[in-house]
Length: 403
Image 1 (cartoon, rainbow, N blue to C red):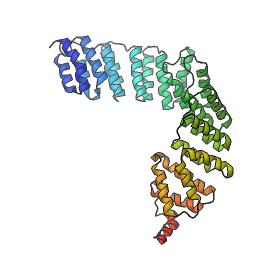
Image 2: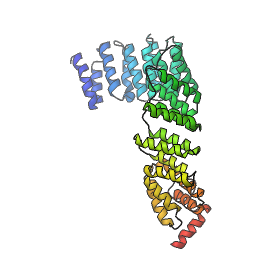
Image 3: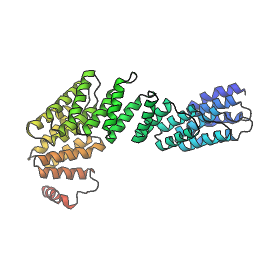
Image 4: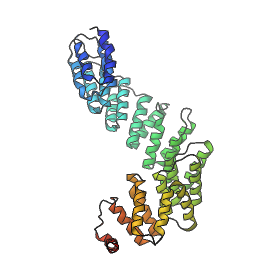
C-alpha cells in the first residue's frame, strides 16, 4: 500500500472510532515511514482521539531506530497527554525525550503545554513548567504571561497572578486573551482585593483593545457589594445605565443584597425594576436575596420588597402570606413548602428555608419557625438533625394528637 494512501486514510478512519484499524495502518509502515509522514499521523491521533490509553504509539516511535520522531511530533504527543489528563506525564515525556535526542523545546512548545495546563486547571504544574522554561533560557512572551496570569487567577493565586500581570504591563504587552481581565477581576472579587480590582478596571477603561463588559462590571459590583460599600455600588450601577452595559442576574443579586443590608429599600426597588426592564430573568439567587432583605425589614419597606418578590417569584410571596396566617394548619404549610422546594435548585433549598424561618422570627412567629425547621429537617436540608430529636418533641406531639 502506498504511503500517501495510508496517510490519507487515517483522518477518515479516526472519526469513525476505528482506532485499532487506524493503529494497524500506523504499524504497517512504521519501519519505513518518513519523518514527515509519521509526524503528520501523530498529529492526527493527537487532534482526533483520546490518546491517553495509546501511549504505546509514543513509545513505539521512541524506540524506532530508522525513523525517529522530530520535535514537532514530540510536541504533539506531549500536548496530547496533557489534554487527556496525564499532564505531568506529558510534560516529563516531552522534556526528557527531547533532551535525550538533543532537541531544545522552543517558546511555541512551552506555550502550547501551558495552554493545556490552563485548560486542565493545573496551576502547580504550570508554574513548574514556567520555571523549567526560564531555566532553559527561553524568554516568555505576552502569550506565556497571559496564560499564566489566567491560570493563577482562576486558582486564586493572587500574588502570582498579579506578578504576571505587572510583568506584562512593564513590557507594554496587552493580553492575548482578553478574558484575562475578567478572570483577574473575578479573583479580586473572591479575595476582596478592592484596590487591585479598581486598577484593573481603570486599565480596561483606557485600553484601546478591551473595554469593560457586563462581567467586568459584575465583578466590580461584587467587590463593592461584599464590602458593604453601597454608595460605590450604586454609582457603578448608574454608570452601567449611562454607558449601556448589559445587566445580568449575578450583578443585580449582589447589589440588591448590599442595598438591603444598608436599608436603602427605595434604591433596591429601582435596581430591581431597571434590571427587569433590561431583561434580567429572576433566578434562585435573586429570589433568595429579596427573601433575605424581606426577613430584615417591616412595615412599608417590607411591602416594597414584597412587590419586587411578587414579580420575581409570586408563588413564594403566596407562601409567605400563608405562613403569616395563624389559622393555616401544619399539613397545608407542609404541602406548600414541599412545592416551594421542588421549584428551587437543591443547593439553594436550605438557604430558602433559613430565610423563611428568619421572616417568621422577625414577625414573632416562633412556632411557625420551628415547624419550618422541622419540615426542612424532614426533607434532608439539615442532615445533622432528625425529626425525632428533642428539639421537635412539641411538633411531633401536636401531629400525633391531630392524627
